[in-house]
Amino acid sequence: MPPYSYRMVDSVDKIDRAPWDAVCQAARHPFMDRRFLRAVEIAFAAEAKFRYATVEDNAGQTVACACFSCYTVDGCVLAPPAAQRFVNAVRRWWPAFFRFRVLLCGLPVSTSGGQVVLTEGVDLQRLALTFDQIAVHLAHQSRTKFISFKEYDPVLAEKLSPLAQHGYRRALSVVTHWLIGEYESFDAYYESRSKRHRANIRRHFRKLEEAGLTWQQYRGRDDVGRLFTDDVHRLYLNVFDRSQAKFERLPIAFFHELARHLPDESSFTFVFQGDRPVGFCCGVASPAAHTLLYCGLDYTLNANSDLYFNIMYRGLGQGLAPGVGTVFVGASADEFKQHMGCTQVPLSIYLKALGPVTAFLFNRAFRWLFPQPPE
Image (cartoon, rainbow, N blue to C red):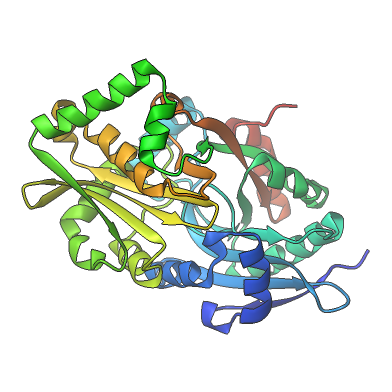
């Protein structure tokens, strides 16, 4: 079985636009939009290297598109607490311990899904062989010993399962949350909730008002770059520092480039104390879905104002619109997001180590480092 042929470029601006856009737009994949990819490429220019692959069949028709990036990750990010405590103890005197340069099929940005689009009828066995050849070539080129295909919902993870035939091992990543249903507006969503949940929402909103805080919603085109200052970025870092799974640390440039390159699709909710932003969330809209990406807040105000709950509900409200059937609400805060009415969806990754010694050690430590999918 021969692999598919493919074209690969090292810049978004070099992508052959017509086939890429035809496949990715048909899939309604906002995070394969060239504008989003350009925003990430610019924001992470100093930290990551990017490649973009267009896979073609024998007739020259595009059957898949994928993004690859080389980025330094925490090798213990998904490990159980005991392993993380051990690694963190070592890092007190060796900060770089267990951090690795990894070749990702995906981007160094968490989007509740991966940067792979497949067409109907693609030969999955042949595609897995092709993806492996691309990944191994790029890993050798960038002198990395690890490859990770990340992060896929159960349907796409199953389609990519032939990667196992090429030495990849599947592990569970984060559990993300999807709010499924066409509510058309926040008012419609609110009316769909139980009496007890409606009372809780009203209580959250009332606490924000009693704390003297206000909120405002914007699109990227509304001069968000001016609003998103270093102080606002520190609000994001507050949440990042408390996160158990720290995969990527976003530079402030990401938020600026997101607003600049997706002026109509990017959404921002800010909460203010007077003129000072004390919380925010941002998201990206697409024709059938809305994704809440990141948030930030001043935790010193959270207890008296239910700041986090207000940020999430207002961000959700900005995403609910006619035609939107799913809102991707993100990982963490599991109990609260289930109360919002979300469905939990486990995401999977596929991992491979290169070189006999590295592969031997990796396979021995695999179950210690990564949660396993059910048999």
